[in-house]
Image (cartoon, rainbow, N blue to C red):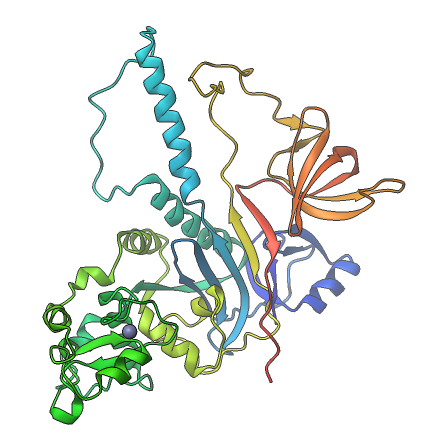
Length: 431
Ligand SMILES: [Zn+2]
């Protein structure tokens, strides 16, 4: 079951409690809501005794979405989970607009903002802004969680496969079957090497089979240099022929070329790893192959947060993930820094920094709106507000955007902090 974060009156993080206990503490006036996202309560009196469970925050970084899970290592309970959606294109698009506006200004021979040629060096470890944004989203959330939960360690999926595990499959007795951890590492390796396509028909299949280029029946080995990714149809059609006999000498040639170790690690994850180490928490790294193996062993469905809970060798043997409702977090950015909005031709055509506060609300605040009858919009909505100078604002809820909600019907739940929040979906009940 999902737990609620608890902090002491001095704001030291305590052991997260069950929702029922949090409700009791709140109704008995023994605690108050400190923060809505993630839901955190603050005790009014210091606790008499404290126990600190070993909580580990586990991360599965992705290009679109990063899974986060906080796991109690002693009990295997998933205490809290979230999925952070990154901004991706929006970052690049915003910079493209800025670049175009500046270029346009220079073309018009205005006297200000000349091109600067001496500031173009990139520091070592530089990442494109869209990727840096992803990395910082994750670091931000680890730092935030540390404030509300007594985290003791971090697990990060750093690489796709373990190059040492698959290096000499023959000598280390590795079977390519899915049953073993090494088998999953080999599968990850093959997926990356063959680009998620059948080596023979180049189609993206739903189910992959590992094909022996020189068949086992004719003495072919289990080394990765003898393995290719194939769809079921091609694997059956090939039978006990070699790839060349089957009419695909290029598959044989490509299989012999090893995939560089560097291919297993991407720069974004590496940058994240280095930043996480600076937090001072011990950072454990895992491979994508191990994550999948752990997840299948524990019979969990694939989502970003269950993958996160399964990262690394430290994953408890039984993971209790039922009843966890992940928080869906969407990175939104924090307003615009432009003092003046240009039109499509680069000419300033809007007032510098239009109204940013209406009725005490700013764009990005999470609010609850209760619209009284009679109105077509009568009802209660929870969402992210986008303010309008008229006072009639837009509300982005999980169900969609509702226009024309006046701020006087809104009640602030959470001040804008660069993210928007909705409730994620819980796991389907186990049969
Ligand atoms: Zn095929």
